Length: 310
Image (cartoon, rainbow, N blue to C red):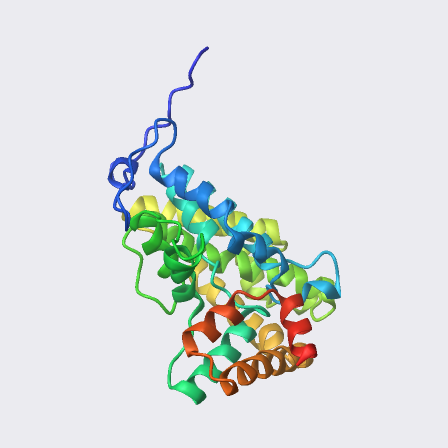
């Protein structure tokens, strides 16, 4: 049987042979790189399956075509691999980080994250960040408390994928961090138009002229720009014009969609649901860590049913 030669990686790509820094030492696999094994472990985790029933922006049961946290995860992973392939970086590492980056996200998207954070701050003086929870999921919560025992590079990429976190230590992690933003901005525009919050004509003209008139064109522009700028600078980077246009489009989405009046009713329902569950558990004396793990692991549907039962 003929074996296809592996595509040569750039000298600055993460080396899978150096990816064996796990919390617990394991023998290497004869058939898979350590980063490939991490991908497989994440896909087979229960936290990954629950992403199918967690909100991205619009609560999924309001329609069958809106993106969920799982479809967002797959879209981020796909576009990140495209960039990694173009730059001859480690695709398996990018895929593992992309698949695992939102495992700790609570129900109801970023509104649910904000609600849980406020509850913890007011009651216990602590905080909640979904990227930190994602690391806890893979380190200690999966496999009945044993965790997935992922490599150092994958764990670093997961906990640092958010713009609020420290920069990733690998170029592959930096790709996922930026492609997460590229994916959610453009795909959330598509969902917002489907929902009726936006029309194509509402989108800011200057930024659309730079990035493209459709979601696929905008992603294509952003990917090409990232590949060209990164190859030129030797780091993961965007050109000034395209990067500024993307940030302006993101600001537009926050004003019109994420914090806009049409989504306010959904946001209030999400906040009320999280707070009702949190208060019930805190009032009966549950420790804050256990409350956090319980609520963050909930799907939208389970959270709504649990709150209704209260």
